[in-house]
Image (cartoon, rainbow, N blue to C red; front, side, top):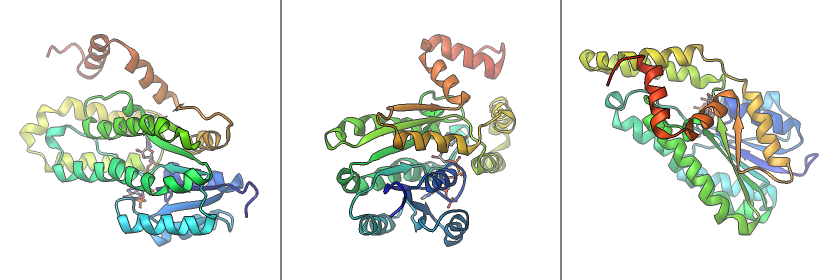
Length: 284
Ligand SMILES: NC(=O)c1ccc[n+]([C@@H]2O[C@H](COP(=O)([O-])OP(=O)(O)OC[C@H]3O[C@@H](n4cnc5c(N)ncnc54)[C@H](OP(=O)(O)O)[C@@H]3O)[C@@H](O)[C@H]2O)c1
């Protein structure tokens, strides 16, 4: 048994926010189950953590892996889980016209269906504790901007899932928090640039030219906009798991607050401002 006697599962703990959260909660005395997709990532985590941290091979799009993880965590925790952090996710940026449908399906399979499937299987363990559910959404789950139709749709879905489950699970004492995260300096930023490059290479040059302004704007944004370290997100997750009254929504980082403020503006004003930022004085 660890210092706190508390148990938590974090998905996508190989890098970034998930890894920082696994290590922070391990240091705070939680028994951490860290979902990874490669043995080597589990080993690497173990080298930085206490003996209590247990890596779990868990691809959230694999039903058998989810069932195996739920059975193992159930056995090792006496059937009680104090927290589930749905962090695993991927990005997909770019104009819809240039985005392959296979990539759209893959993203929804991870960011939405996988999250639902995993959560569904762990509700019995959360109910027994009772534990807390924390979903990692994004500023794009509050404000859908051009270039992000697919990613924003998946993060709006995460927000909807959090809102729905907050009331559905309240009778069991399970609190649900949605983390609206702004830009964080993790491996995902390199992945976004690579995937933008791939989309551009595969596109018809004449069609790509139609989106050149958008492409340049968001390439610069990924490269230049400052992000926060993943450890700051981990701190907020630790707070949401331990505070007596967890909030329904946590805004993490300046980007998240900015997006929330923009999302509250009247639509016409908001879209006018965004259009001007993207295209300058050009008329539609
Ligand atoms: N970084 C940001 O600016 C930012 C902003 C807002 C929200 N977020 C959200 O924060 C979460 C973590 O992102 P991050 O920035 O830390 O990115 P990251 O470093 O790329 O980490 C993503 C994690 O998700 C895992 N993953 C991907 N597909 C999976 C699957 N099918 N099953 C299980 N795990 C899977 C990855 O595992 P592998 O290493 O095996 O691929 C990795 O551990 C995501 O939900 C993301 O949308 C990030």
